[in-house]
Image (cartoon, rainbow over all chains, first blue to last red; front, side):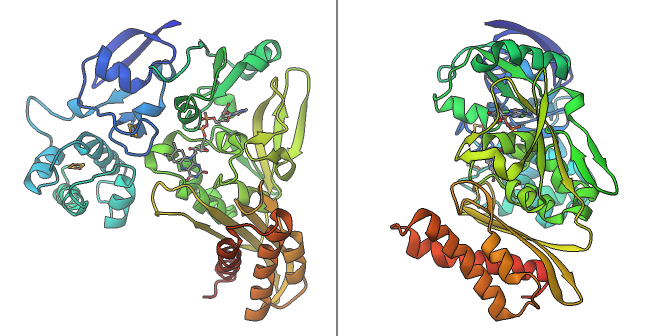
Length: 156
Length: 287
Ligand SMILES: Cc1cc2nc3c(=O)[nH]c(=O)nc-3n(C[C@H](O)[C@H](O)[C@H](O)COP(=O)(O)OP(=O)(O)OC[C@H]3O[C@@H](n4cnc5c(N)ncnc54)[C@H](O)[C@@H]3O)c2cc1C
Ligand code: FES
Ligand code: FES
């Protein structure tokens, strides 16, 4: 069944017509062409699909688009400002926090949520905040360092 | 998406509308709160229903009151909220801890305590502490509502006494003033792994003597339970290492008595005893 849903993504307003069983992940990727958000496990375990919904990190594979009526969504495409990488994105590059890059969009969104909640997170808070995003390549250390670097500079 | 059946989406404006809808269509309807259990279940293709009733935005179901006697809260309170609420940390720290163990930040932001209860998974993290607190839940239908003890809500793994036309609308538990609390869980990895077994303990210690002991288990018996025989061993006693060991072994014995000896018993028996002992020690603040 088709449903009309309106929400904002990265500050831009959208009204879409979706099947009632379409997931936010599919709407973002297939309908809006925002393919930065990745699909991994589809069952909430890998975090590749992480976006912010009303300021909080969620798995977009576990949300039906119809549920986000009136909501505000931030995806990895929304991190850039005036065509420039955000401090977090810069730090991910600088600290080699990106290898194959599959986890990076989810990781960046989880990191954004951490810094939004607490601009000066402890190492433990960082670890807890990214625990829902799996990275098969980096062993996490470089990712943690990148987030710490941004926190230190107070740029989060 | 291919794997998820289609359905008509229904968004009621208030609880009364939701209950009206359930009265008509309850047996063909699934309720969705945060969706973290439901979407996984649907992905596995076992679910088929005609209507999806979205209660996720009903502010009437998102409340928290606390008074002299205890706590009453709405089913939509999330694990993130439970874990971070100063009031929960103060009144029932083991509940905050248990909620903090659920999945990941992403899951805790969406997952609700009501969904955790109604899914009735044997390993639901918030349930053992709630049972130790003598939690009661309100099941509301369009005509009448009833308060059910959480202990009696579960009939088998993933099965409950909730009727198709009912909804869980409130969760209440008394304030256990002066009690000490402990919660431990066993999981494969720290993050993301669902608990394999968990133990929640509440102890009322007065002048060194245990006046009241509550031990609730998750994933030890088919449904979450209080282990009264072990609680009795502790009541009116002064805790010492042997007594804690004995009570912990009693929890393991209950499990065996219930389920019989199985291939997994040699593994589970000492694990259950050790977890219980750890939970008791946590509550007592000893190592
Ligand atoms: C990756 C992952 C990890 C997880 N880890 C854990 C974990 O460590 N520990 C744990 O305990 N759980 C875990 N879960 C399970 C889940 O997140 C929790 O059980 C959560 O609390 C469910 O809440 P929800 O609001 O998302 O439920 P939903 O999926 O919305 O609903 C779950 C069920 O309850 C029913 N329901 C919900 N609310 C009501 C209501 N008010 N009245 C009547 N029926 C209702 C729904 O119809 C459905 O059957 C995990 C899930 C995932 C995907
Ligand atoms: S795709 Fe959503 S968590 Fe893996
Ligand atoms: S960089 Fe490859 S999964 Fe993280």
